[in-house]
Length: 283
Image 1 (cartoon, rainbow, N blue to C red):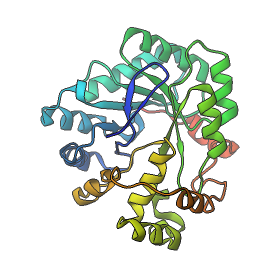
Image 2: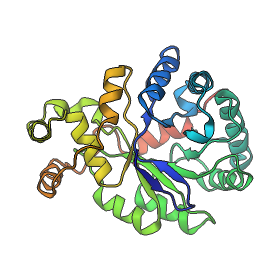
Image 3: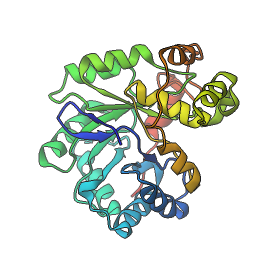
Image 4: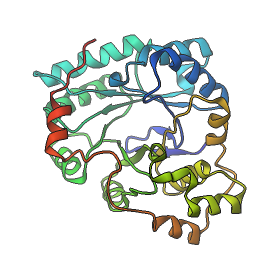
């Protein structure tokens, strides 16, 4: 497994396992299978409602936390956001059965983000979060957070896939020392990704699947990725991307698939900001 070094020196696997949209009753088995397949980066969130199942799988695996990299995420907090951020992580740690997480991300760029970030900075100083970062932050919001706070986010987890490649966003993150991480790397199969002729032909040339081509493309761009599957054979396939390399011409060809727009929703959309910004989780 290749790793990336975050801006505070923490090593993070470049490829992991995500559990978004896996029902809680299926999550424990899925994470157990993922760990057996060799994944060591696990990505969950308070909003996914499956942290407890992730925690059970970790405990039952017998793999010590020191050999894992566990990420969870903070949902939008009510005032006082700074204090509530600590309470939110306490809840996540209790559900996960851990005394710290390796990465704590602010899930959405809404609410009192600066108050939430100050709370996250305190958690980092206390050692309850080895690294802290954000998710779904566009460049303007990311830079605003950086210039007005003490700690620069270690990671920004954003939508990145062949149809929305975020090249300029990744370059800005690199300039500020922020690691790009992809969610939705397969675009949830939209735009017929898995039968795309260009990706299919690229896979044929390497004896690999379209999914493996996409993951390899992300890895070669230096982007952390967290593919999800509930099928053990797919988990094994997805992690098997370190024995081939896309050529410069193939990388350039994949670049032509970029539409420059989200296939899901724009976090800068006022309607979405209002909907997500008002939603609250109950413990």
